[in-house]
Length: 192
Image 1 (cartoon, one colour):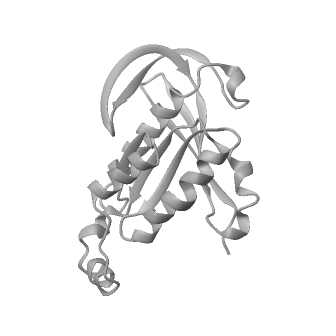
Image 2: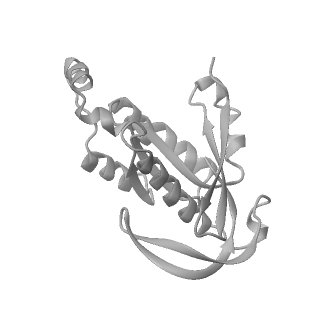
């Protein structure tokens, strides 16, 4: 039976001495948790909406269900749209199964268009099967994006501040990043 949410804690190391502590909450999509799931959004600094590129319906849900729920409960938090299981995009069995249903895997350009449609800050793709690096890249983007979202302790009860230099990524359009070094606060963040 599904749980309301699972929590994963991790630390993103900006450098040897600077880090961002993260709490990632994987919330249940089950309708039986619709009334309690919004309670988990309270301290979110950033929202990651994930879907499977091998399940076109999951991207439809990202638009019709998840982006509207997130905007209702977290209107100012940035969103990262994440296409998961990209290794299945070219998997023969997956492509054949989708062809039986007269559909295809979600292509990068389709997902990028969806990201723009829902007002996502970034679109990113991952495949934990092909590369742990792609998972780490999404964690990095989430950490740096959420750290830039908070500037004062009063904005979140879970916010902790230490003086540090952080490498920040600035995003121009969808996913193009430039790196800047800037005096900033080291922060802990909650990512939904």
